[in-house]
Amino acid sequence: MPLAALLFLSPTLFFSCARMGNPDGGWYDETPPKVLGATPEDKAINVNSRKIKIFFDEFIKIDNPTEKVVISPPQMEMPEISGAGRKIEIELKDSLRPNTTYTVDFSDAISDNNEGNPLGNFTYSFSTGTEIDTFEVSGYVLEAENLEPIKGILVGLYDNPEDSAFTTTPFLRVSRTDGSGHFTIKGIAPGNYRVYALQDADNNYYFNQKSEKIAFNNDIITPSSRPDTRPDTIWRDTLHLERINMIPYMHFYPDDITLIAFTEKQTDRFFVKAERKEPDHFTLFFTNGSDSLPNIKGINFDANNAFVVETNETNDTITYWLRDTALINQDTLRMDISFMGTDTLGQLCMQTENTELLPKLSYEKRLKLQKKEIDEWKKEQEKQKKKGLPYDSIYPVKPLAIKLDAPSSLDPDQNIFFSSPSPLAVADTNMIHLYAKQDTLWYKTRFKFEEVGNRRYQLKAQWLPGTEYSLETDSAAFVDIYGLAAAATKKGFKVKTLDDYATILVSLQGMGNKTKVLQLLNTSDAPVKEVITNKSDAEFFYIKPGQYYLRLYIDENNNGKWDTGSFENNQQAEATYYYSEPIECKAKWDFNVSWNPTAQPRYKQKPEKITKQKPDKQKAIKKRNIERAAKLGIQYNPKN
Image (cartoon, rainbow, N blue to C red; front, top):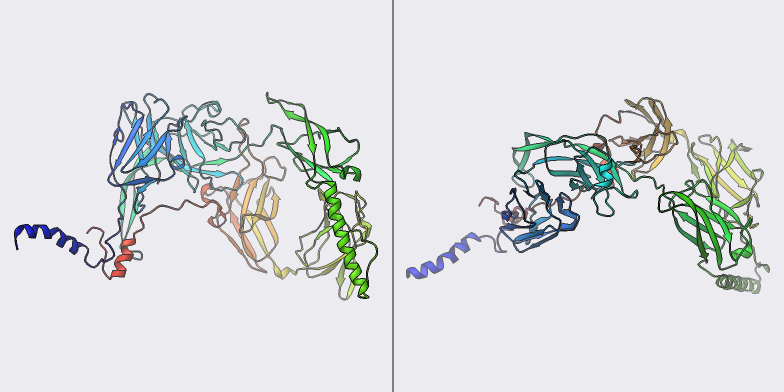
């Protein structure tokens, strides 16, 4: 055979040998893209160009650059970032600062275009001065109330130790938290810094709106570093470990900064809206409460003694129930609402809002629906009459629909609740009867009946475990402001025996005599029981079998509820802690928990099972060649 023919055939022969045993197209590409170079060069000094190009050995794509790519110092004008072909182009719009290190942190945004192999945590940097700053600091940002990791919040540094920097000047250097609440700020110069977190609503990189979530502390941090090693695990396949290599690297400190974030209480008071969903009442909504109620001046009606007024706990939501049915039937209510509101200078002053309120259904429409209902009732009664069955000739008045929350099986520390759809004029306790069964006889039992909220009432008694009860109300025990009476009711229930429950005894260390609120949580991170104490011991009784968790917060102002913080007053939100292990409760068992809430860093405390913000799914090489080789009955060696 001629030499030329051999030369022509040889590449084909070689290619066939390389693919032998792989009829489906060869091995997958499992190599992440490599950086070939950049202009300006990575870690270049004395740079004066705002245009950057980074080159790769293969076609790449960049995922969600506006969220994943963080440029530091922060850019007031959004830079242009694009990935096309084998390069990434960046154009900074802000002027370059002198003697400053710039970092472009891509996180895991870069991967190859075909298989999606991630480049990993790649950061490009340059300096406008004569040296590159290389220090890093890292840590976590958590929600103050429940220690949830906060994803996507900005974390920034100031070299100015004064608090005023955070409210007047953009961050010096920034980062953004991932799904674990973790952040790393890179390219830091030697020095002393303060660190803050900010949910930046207006993209100005400093705190100027009370609605912005923030975190701060008074610690001064000094970046440092030292050589260290970390394990790198090499797997032969998905089941077999080949070796663990110890990889040298530079360890930067501090690496455990913990910022506890909160949103300040809204103190500015603005009128939000007025709403009349139903004809018999309307509601006013404000951004914050006030010690004084608004003054209502009717324009097309007389507002004097026209309402029964309900307020929520914070006085920012106020509901007005119309006493007169003529007003209820009036479709349009025009009024002037005078209230204390915040002016442009931040001062409270009297303001007036002119409002016109209409219900969802007009009076005419409601009459038509009522007539239709009555006509249908009459037809039904005529059918009954023709069949010789009992029937009514007078349309019945619907009773007041009192809701009774009384389960058939009651816990010994549980109470019974009544709620009314409209305000009550009468709640006659003489017409409420509670009976307890002893042997075969029923005995009247004492109880306490009290209002616990708007149109909500609680019946309390000393419930005896294993005892059967009957709760009975006479007709007209409850009458609302429109004269509508409730029907008679009878409800039987039984209190569970003590053998159905567990008890949890908590012994606290390191918390002193501060007022502590301990909450027993279910698997949805919601409180099921609560104990307030200034002692070192707390007890939870009548616990149903199941899995529970513990949360504690320090009630600094002894008001029985968790309170947020204030940057202006240098006040942190009330400190919250989690017991890091679940508590498995079994009936008839006592469980003793010894807990020092401050012994473990707070970013490690909240159990993963009840943490709603889950870590980001890590991008990784898919390693499909091992599976392919197994199917082909051969051993895959990535080195070949």
